[in-house]
Length: 202
Ligand code: IMP
Image 1 (spheres, protein in one colour):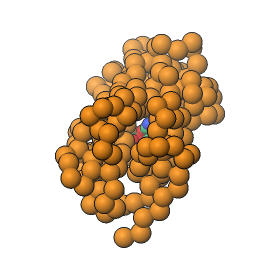
Image 2 (image 1 turned 90 degrees about the vertical axis):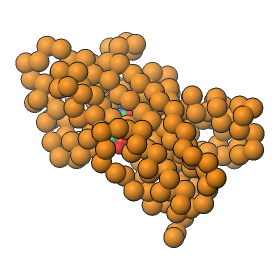
Image 3 (image 1 turned 180 degrees about the horizontal axis):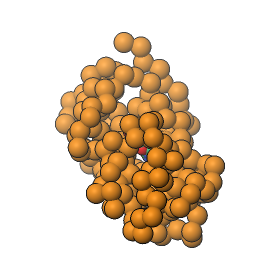
Image 4 (image 1 turned 180 degrees about the vertical axis):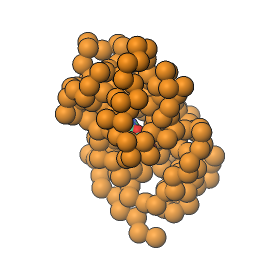
């Protein structure tokens, strides 16, 4: 099994983040740096199952990744849940993004008044010796009427967080998105735990 590690920046403690998504990696690196944690992007095989629960998807991937590399790893899984679509696409966000995309979601939402939606992120941490532990973050917002902004990735151009100033995530810098985002919240919970007293051994 080939394992490729590219380091974030060299600080004391390292979090090995299994992802092929460079945007997710940049977001994680920025959040974890606030806790003086370095982030390494780990390229290792990690199966992504289809399941109704983001927790199950993240845990399963993390267990598979740790089996393949033998390191303590972080895996993250996220989804967009649209209220008027009964939580769709939710755990199927990736498939929906890759098939009908933003235009498909906007079409489904045409003439729908209730545009409330939320993003959820589950960060799973697992070591070769211990069971996975999950950290969850959520951000409430609404689906904008059209695509707006060019930063970020995925559904960012159509998601406007309630606690923001009217911009979509795609109109924000990584730092601004991280303050409000599902991933920022989940990663901060992880970072507090990981850099805390209970986990000095990692
Ligand atoms: P996954 O976590 O990579 O499985 O993401 C599922 C789908 O949601 C993918 O299509 C991503 O592009 C999208 N997605 C995940 N996180 C975000 C985000 O922070 N902003 C926008 N889209 C996201």
